[in-house]
Every structure is written in C-alpha cells, then in structure tokens.
Image (tube, rainbow, N blue to C red):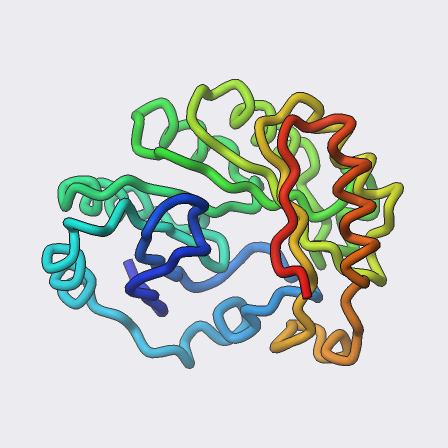
Length: 233
C-alpha cells in the first residue's frame, strides 16, 4: 500500500473524534472541482509515507486518538485496502472510510466483516445525467445508488455529503439529492474551496454566499434527519 499523505491529528475529519488521516493516491473520478489535484492526477509526484512512521505515531499517541480516517483520492480502488484497515485495527484504531461510492462490492465486504466504524460517502450531484459533469467521467449511477442503499441499511454510523460548487449545483439539485437519501441519518453540505482544483479555471469561481448554503440546508432538512454545513465563511 502506497500512502502519500498522513495528517497526524485532526479534529475536523471525523466529527466528534480525534483522528489521524491517511491519504491514498489515485481516483477513478475526475471531478473538476476536486481540491486534491496532485493526489488524483500526479500521485507519483508525492512523497510516500512509510507504515513505520504511521505505526510509531499511533503507538505513541493511541491514548488520545479515537481512530484513523482513510481518504484519497478514492480508497476503494486499492486492492490492499483491507490489509491496511486490518493492520490499523490491530493497532487498536477505529476506522472511518471516505468514498465516492463507485465500488459497492468493496464497501459491502468491508462492512460485512465489521472493518468499518464510520463511512462518509460523497454524493456529487443528483442521480441523473448531471453526475457526469460533476464527476468528470461517465458516472456509474447504478453502483452509486447501490452504495447509498448498502450504507443506509448497514447499521454502522455514516454520513452523506455534497460539495456545493456554484456552476454545477443549485437549490433544486440539493433538494433532489436530499429526497433521494430521504430518512438518512446525516447529510453534510460542504462549501466549495476554489484552490488547487483539477480544472484550474474553477480557481476563479467564488463560492456561494453563506446565506444561500443555509437556505439549501433548510430545504434538505425536509428529507434528512440531520443536516450540517461545513466550511462556512
């Protein structure tokens, strides 16, 4: 397993937890607004983090660490993801997985084997042709829908989240997403960050005003039990 980033301590990557965050390289999406451009497009340019360094930090700080977040890129494209999670489990860590939901079979296997404590799935857009524009590929909508169902029925803790990019998403889109995941435990609206995006033209795009994001959250609350906003100005 090649690891290209390690955040030793984070209070924001897993709500309510003190966590370390591991970044895995590569992704099967090409979201124009993704702010991890090098990690997705040029992962070979990033310095590798050794498992020894990670293990040393976890062992020295496990008294206050609640768990480890595995993110990317897209973690589920890596065939040795299970081995990484199992290794972290042996170190006494709980696991949160970030995913785009494109590989439901991987998610299903990990959940069935009780290897995940929390899963956060990005829903990029309404589950229609708009998904292609926001994900930058011909989106596997049926797989994404299956992942949503698996997560909601799993019994483990989870959240869905959408980064609200102004040129792609509006209030109707957020309502469509919220309606599709109606009854979900938690839905997070994330403010767009115009920095280091895959499509460099988006670096000049201003995020929505906070008031507009809050209106979107109120709309989503008609369908989802808990709606939170991240990255407010």
